[in-house]
Structures are given as C-alpha cells and as structure tokens.
Amino acid sequence: MTPAAPRQDAPARKPAGKLRTYLLLWTLLPIAAFMLMDTATLYRSTRAATDRANDRLLEATARQIGDRIHVERNQLSITVPLAMIEALEGAGGSRMYWRVLDFEGRQLAGDDALPLPPAGTRGPGLQAHYTATVNAQPVRAFALQQPIEMSQGRGVVRILVAETLEARHQQHAALLRGMLARQVVLMLLIATVVGVVVHRGLRPLRALRRELHARPADDTAPLNARGPEELLPVIEELNALFARQHGVLEQQRRFVADASHQLRTPITVLKTQLQSALREPAPDAGVLAELSRTVDRMAHLANQLLNKARLEHAGEPAEAHPLDLGGVVREAVLELSPLIAARHLDFALEEAAPVTVRGQPWLATELVSNLLSNAIRHTPEDGKLGVRLDQADGHARMTVWDSGPGITEDARAWLFRPFAPAGTVRGAGLGLAICLDIAKALQGRIELVNRLAPDGRVAGLDAIVCWEQAPQRGV
Image (cartoon, rainbow, N blue to C red; front, side):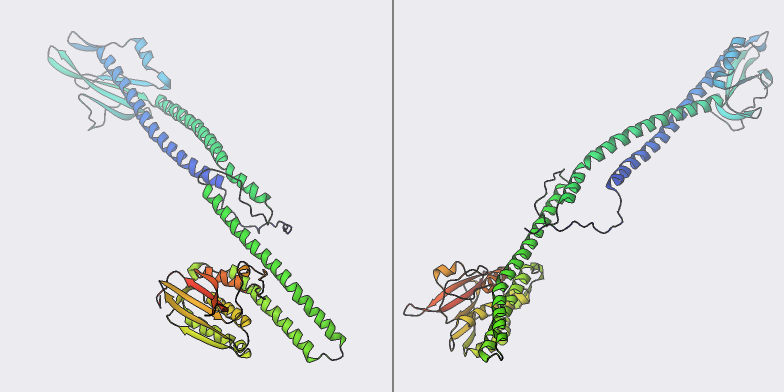
C-alpha cells in the first residue's frame, strides 16, 4: 500500500455558526419569551386580585364606620374609638382618610380634605370606588351611602374612606420581585438541563469528528462511530462516500500497476533495439521496421490503458442517449478501413434489423472498434470478416465475426481478464476486458462462440453482444 499522504488542513472558511449555540438559542429563547409573557400575565392578574382585596378592606372599613353612626335626640352622631383610628392609620406604610356626611351633605366627622366621588361615578347599589388626591397624594377611595331611620323619616348618610397607595405599591413591588426571582431560578434550571442535554446529544458528533480527524488520507474503511437515529444517515452516506473513494483509489492503483507492468517490456525492447541501431553506422530498413512495430505496440497498449481508465470513470446512466448501432459500426469500419485494406480482407456489413441502444456515444464506438480490431488482428490475410445486426426472440444482437483460428475452451476462461494469458490467442491484453465492461455499461452481455464449418472444424470466431430487449428506433 502506498504511504498515506501528509495531512493537509482545509483552507479556512467562515463557519456558519456553532450547532451548540444554535440549539441553545432556539431552545432557550422561546422558553424565555414564553416565561416572560406568562410572568407579565400572572403579575397583572395577581395585582388585580390584590387590588380587589384592598378595595374590599376599604369597603369593610367603611361599613365599620357606618356601624358607629347612631341617632340621639333626633340628631346624628358618630363615635370612632381611638383604637380603631390607630388601626386604620399606617397599615403597611399607607395613611387612611375617612369622612362622614349627614343627610344634607354637611361634614359630620372625619377629614374634610377627602373629596367626594366625581360626578357620574356609579357603582353597584349605593357604593362606588374611585381615585382622588388628598394633600397632593393620590389615594384610592370608597364611597358608601348608608340609609338611617329617624323620626322625621329615612335619610342617607354618605361615608367616605380612602388610603394612600404606598402599601399597594410595596405589595406590587414585592409581588414582582418574587415572581421574577422564581422565573430566574427556573430559567437557570432549564438552561442547565438544556445545556447538559445538548452537550450529551452532540457527543456522537464530537466522536465522529475525532475519528475523521485521526484517519489517514488513504483510509477508506467504514466508520466505527455510532450515534442516534438522526445521525445514522450521515454515517451511512460517509461510508458510501468512502466506498466510492476506495473504488477510485483501487482503479488508480490498478491503472498504475497495469501501465507499469505492461509498458516495461516494450520500453525495454525499444531501448534494446535503439542501442543496437546506434551501434550500426547506418540502420537498415529491417531495424527501422522493428522499431516502428514496437512503437505501434506501445501506442496500442497505451490507448487500451487510457480507454480502460476512461471507462472506469464513465458518467452515470442518466447521461445516456439513444444510439443507432448501425451508424456507429459504419463510422468504426471507416476509421479501420486502412487496416482492413492493408491485410486484403473481405469485409461485410449486414443489417437484418435496426439496433438502437442507450449509452454514451464514445462507449459504443469503443466497443465496436475493439471487437473489429481483434477480428482484424486474428483474421489471416485475404480472409473474411464482418458485422451483423439483427433481432430475434425479443433480443437485439450485434455479431462481429472473423475467419481466424477461434479460441480453445481453456482460453475462454481467461480472455476477459486484463493481460491474462490466453493460450494460443496472442495479444488479448486489455481489448476484450474493455469490451466486457462496455457491454455491461450499455446494459448488454457479450460472449465468444466458435463458428463451425459443415465438416466440424473451426471456421472462425463470433463475438456476440446481446441486449435483453430491442428498443425501437428513435426511442
């Protein structure tokens, strides 16, 4: 195995952001926003409930004062004990004000600085809540109209009670501080739990990163990292990528090995021939002819190696196009016609039925050219060869036939292997191996069959490429 290339850090790229930060923000921010809205709603509702409770205390105080009103000698009088006054003063830092008006609206008792309810202020029954100002201080007040029976008849006494807002403000502040403290503690607890969960959830990603960082450049083994179900598709795709990378590396190794192995011998031969020619004062035509044949073999071998490498890196099936195989055969024959003429061969093209295949044009051209080249190489001079296109039993076929020696059964097992020995058949090289790969790429199959004469002897070889279905022309 070739040594691993030194690890190179990828060029710095601006990160899109940390996944941990993304998860924490998009988990905690909605929770914090919801808790804030919930706290505001709860604070308003609790504050309203507290204010209602304080208003009921004002009502109770007004009724207590009303219970102290009595009639003496047909006159109204009220006696408020000092203990009650002290109880009303300064509860929670607030100051209480009270006032009683008789039937005629005259001051009967209390603090005359406490104003009457504004005109239009109405409440349920004979009572009403309102806000006012006493001695430049805002107060919350309650007005109660209490009927009194006298000898002259029934009258209505008005009782006013108010308190300053210090106690209420203190209650509101204490309520808000308590709620915020609880929400902050709860938010810290949620942030801690979410942080721990995110940290543990990202542990498989950190393990995967460490494993990838520790891998050498030529390591294409599957990953050992495991993780939750959501991470498995990523690991599977990475393993599939490593498998494809392994295939590419193997192709490169095979290409280098094939090229170094197969080119070594002709290069050595060429070097020997050149050294021999240099020792002569003037090389004769025979030496130059040998040099030319060696160069031709090297060029042929180099073309085969390049075609094999190109085939191994061929495009996906989605790039395939419908191809008229008859036109491909005619182009290949035209290109190889100098070789056919040089050997005085009799070539025949038979198109019993049109054959259309799907694939890349260069693949079909290489298939026909390689099969024809093999047929030309193994057909004796003044011999016959040809190509036949037909359809039968739902199959499309292309047959490249020659009048050569055919193949033995022992050689048949080796013919499609690159550079494998092929018995009496010389020059098998890469040609048939390339043909087999191209036939598979074109979704066909290839086989070699000895063609027998009536007397049973081998009259030649048929290279048959067959497709399961015969696509219609123009598909």
